[in-house]
Image 1 (cartoon, rainbow, N blue to C red):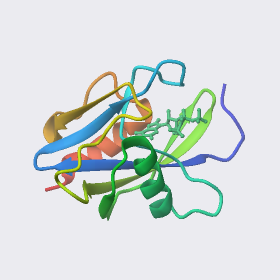
Image 2 (image 1 turned 90 degrees about the vertical axis):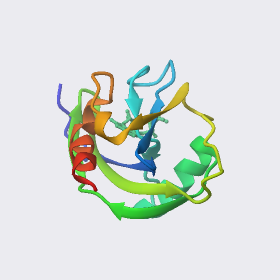
Image 3 (image 1 turned 90 degrees about the horizontal axis):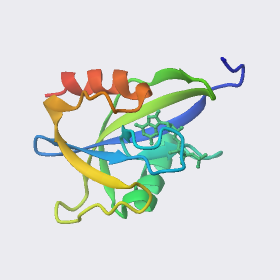
Length: 135
Ligand SMILES: Nc1nc2c([nH]c(=O)n2[C@@H]2O[C@H](COP(=O)(O)OP(=O)(O)OP(=O)(O)O)[C@@H](O)[C@H]2O)c(=O)[nH]1
């Protein structure tokens, strides 16, 4: 069933290290449990997307980011409502800081060219297409 509520703004970090991109697995008990996503989350009232991204990544992974580039926002309608996903190409501030999954069940580094997989959150398809265009 489609919802008439306005979309929820969600930011996500496409964290790149060399040829690899970080993916995070949604934990049991949450919507889309077991699916992979880019770390991030909802933008809180009064926050800019950049601020939300830095906050979410510190909460979820315990890491600081450098934002390199904003990608195109993509609207996706789930049965429980719609989200507008704002992707950002990022790198970790310190190459030596290892992300820890504080809120996800697992993290993996995947080759940039092999991001497309059936168990990605459905809203991420346009983000994956955008990442494929990046040098
Ligand atoms: N962070 C993130 N969220 C995504 C992606 N793709 C996607 O559909 N989403 C959806 O966007 C929403 C993100 O909000 P969130 O991370 O704060 O979600 P949550 O389940 O913790 O929310 P909750 O605390 O209200 O239960 C979720 O519904 C999530 O399923 C993605 O690549 N990254």
